[in-house]
Image 1 (cartoon, rainbow over the protein chains, first blue to last red):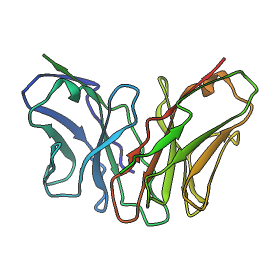
Image 2: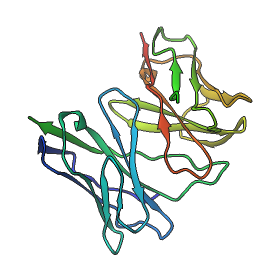
Image 3: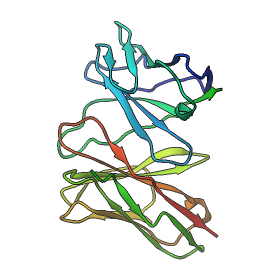
Image 4: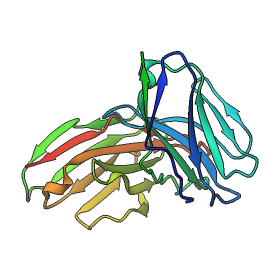
Length: 114
Length: 112
């Protein structure tokens, strides 16, 4: 799995967009970018994933640069409940019988302030 | 639909004892993975099971073991507990062809 680099912490005002960057300069052609978040002492929660196109779901948007060496997770209207550690993970898709392993880095602690 | 459940949620043991943790995946999910989370080491992969077979293993000593049953439920066992085994143990389940993994709430193990 490719290594990722994220800032250790970020702050955001409630109601504003939170833009969380991730560098993955050694990403391979078949590797996806995944984002998970972990609210204090809970299990991680899947947010979104993408290969090369930008993706959007009800939680967030994922912008991947054309060279795929970096990406940005966007929470369009951050709320206090979005305060969490956000993990960017790069890995190849798993096979049916194996390959679910996720390698978590240290992530970004996002604090949403009122 | 019910999420991933883990039992017990909290556990206190003493050094040298052994412990068994249980994970029930989401119905229809056949892959179960286990992770250990500590303040010093972060989230680390323990092992992965599919169809009752261990498919992948992280860098943990043999004191850590697991198994999966025919109904996809999984257990992990830690023998001869050490103080450093105090951690949040997380279980995740997923199904074929789906990228998303679903995590349970974890079991908080404290070793005294």
